[in-house]
Image (tube, rainbow, N blue to C red; front, side):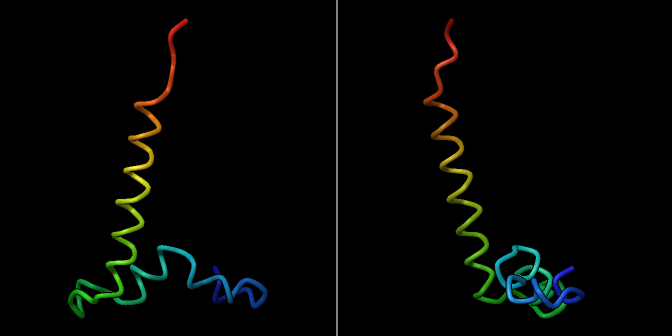
Length: 59
């Protein structure tokens, strides 16, 4: 959607879709820039697991 709307075109590089689809890893092979996306996924999953284990649901 970002290429179609000029006012949000500058935010295009902030989405994971840009990092994954722009480089087309299935055709061009792995590029080091994709490590940024993998690092964010690992970090968010780690924080989520940590937060889930710390929750207190006892009544």
